[in-house]
Amino acid sequence: MTGGQALILAGTGMLAEVAEVLVLQGWHVVLPSRRYSPIPASETKPGMAGSRALRPPGLTRQGVGEPGRAIWVEASWDRPHELAKKTEAVLEGRAGLLVAWVHGQYRHSVMRAVEPLLAPDAPVVEIRAADEFAPAAEVEPSLVAHPTQIVLLGLVSEVDTGRALPHREVAGGALAAIHRAVNGHPPSVHQIGRLRPMVR
Image (cartoon, rainbow, N blue to C red):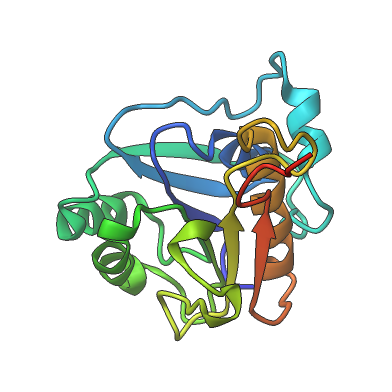
């Protein structure tokens, strides 16, 4: 796969665990968002063991033994061209991976704006709310020129169907999709969590 740079489009902190794992694996991660959400480059902190446990094998850049870095860019989804321009200014060439959790209202314009920042063969991982689409088999990727893994998020946990879908399950699903993407698996759609609580 081309490059060791990843672009993560998400609300502030929504994919912080994912960014942290990628940084620990040697990726250089660019995070455009409205508010700053720091991602440590190499320090160990409480909860890191849990983040490492989420990490599927295969996310390490070949030959890289030290952590990467995370760069925050102040940007807003409602100004997609400005977001792309600011992001391009901090990228070193084109990104080799895009992970995007963008609200449906802004998804098309933001994804189109950042597409020129991606390497031609860069895989994409899109995270979406499962209730936006029915059925899952008809879900189309935003960037058809890039191999895309789509993660559909349910409303409740797979483990405890009486609780909302926790960030840990979201991060685990996103990391599994990234693993498939960087290892060249065919495009696919996977649902994380359930759409509604189970009736007992």
